[in-house]
Amino acid sequence: MKVVLLGTTAGCVLGFRKDLILDLVQRGIKVYAFAIDYDQYTELRVKALGAIPVGYAFNRTGVNPFSDLLNTLKLTVKFKEIGPDIVFSYFAKPVVFGTLAAKLAGVKRRIGMLEGLGFVFTDQPEGNSLKISILRRVQLILYRISFPLLDGIVFLNPDDPKDLISKNNLKVKSIKVLGGIGLKLSDYPYSIPPVSPVRFLFVARLLAEKGIFDFLAAAKIVKNFYPKAEFVVLGGLDDGNPGSLSAKDLNEYKSSGLIIHPGHVDNVVDWISGSSVFVLPSYYREGVPRSTQEAMAVGRAVITTDVPGCRDTVIDGKNGFLIKRWDPEELAKKMIFFIDNPLEIIRMGKNSHEIAKIQYDALKVNKKFVSMILTD
Image (cartoon, rainbow, N blue to C red):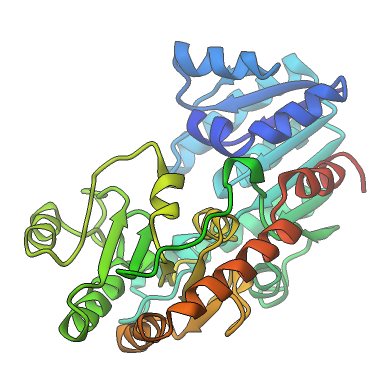
């Protein structure tokens, strides 16, 4: 059997599809891992997993229909040359155009996965712009064309199929909810969280929709009452994104002592272990945030927003708190609760760890994941 995994970047193949590739290869399946930016190093790493790396052309964010059509036809040719039994596409553009190419190439089984609905379907606090409204309409048209060609589509949380498929009356043969990509739990060993001082950790790109501005605003409030509390930010700037924190502001926050920002780090687990509480005040249409899963596995209480994807990681009051989106004051109150009640940091952290063992063990998740791809 031959299976094509059609995604975007080599980093995503190696970071998020590694366990899937290993499982498929172990079953004797020939795996072709497609990405748009392979270099010699990443190709070698994919080959080491037992898969065949295949480069292809696509603009992840472009909206040129002629370019997308041409690239779809080129992808069709590649599929015909390989002759896969299954094409599994993930992320929005690969799901749309990869599914069309697979249909044109006569691939028998076509599966898609959307790990969250993405920026186009993320509501903004100031209301959605005309540009976003138009892009959302275009995206829905493309989904309306491609989804009926899928044998099934996989979502990570139960809200996404309701908000995308049901509300917009999109046609698809089969819908499945995975519940999270899963983690190799041995890479995220449990540790008792430090409680003096209490250290709050934010891990994400430094974008408005990921909640960085709400985290900073809440940190200012808390620091006024508890100056010893610490706030750690792990994540990079996105200079081309209008919602990004600026380098100038980041440096000011660091020099003022409001936050600790070590820059790029390769040892995220160590930083989670050194933290007391994990915070993700995101309003982005997440699938199920991997960073939150990692923090839970290590045994950290979580404060996150009551929005799709994020809400699936927290049982309010058991392993953390769910707060309203766009509300740094409520976030600050929950942070202060943990400072005033340090034993709750440990109790809720243990509960997070237990939930992670049940819900995010890669061995369990991957078995379910592979079954969704290979069988009806």
